[in-house]
Length: 244
Ligand SMILES: Nc1ncnc2c1ncn2[C@@H]1O[C@H](COP(=O)(O)OP(=O)(O)O)[C@@H](O)[C@H]1O
Ligand SMILES: [Mg+2]
Image (cartoon, rainbow, N blue to C red):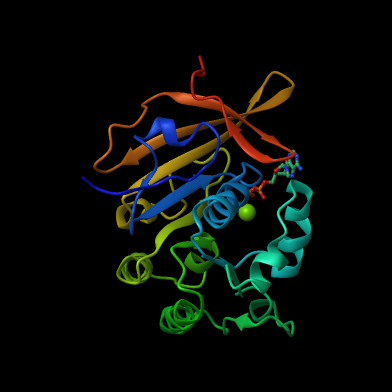
């Protein structure tokens, strides 16, 4: 039997036989504001709080200091987890936009897969993480002008995570009214074991959030689209309800 890693996100694990497969990589796709970063961080925080599994969060779009501040509103004290060596955040944002960073882990500019992976290997030696997040693949995609190369780089990242014993989530930002709801560059979902899609659709004059497990190898997952909400404790999925 393959081992499952519960995300601990309310309503999610029952949609997929108890969680993600250990040491595999998953893509969480959706438009801006759909909840990708929250989903990914909730997976890390639950790992720390409920399963004693340290986590790595690579932030390519927001500076770690902002992330720490934002997530305090869910009661997640990331700085405390970092002090306890249960969480490592990699600042892959500041140098990209030419700002100095006083973070402990900083990724170099321009983006280089080898140096990111070296960084993750170093962190692994220090904290022995079990879960990892790369938020997002999209900003990496924009630095590589060749799709075939981007696909290979993502494959290197997901395979290295697997070898390091990390169950990982990579996020992917899609264009709201774009053709491809699953990925931005059309290659991201090929290098992962599963793809989870977050929707944020306009229904009359409000936006409604919903989630779909689009692909999950080795898993008899729900084929329905389920509503979810972002509450002051994070994401809550209504697994017994489905979108019409
Ligand atoms: N404390 C909160 N309560 C309810 N909704 C929130 C809260 N914090 C953030 N949100 C919602 O989450 C959205 C951001 O989610 P995020 O995961 O950053 O999206 P993405 O990474 O997909 O762009 C915000 O635009 C807001 O609608
Ligand atoms: Mg985000």
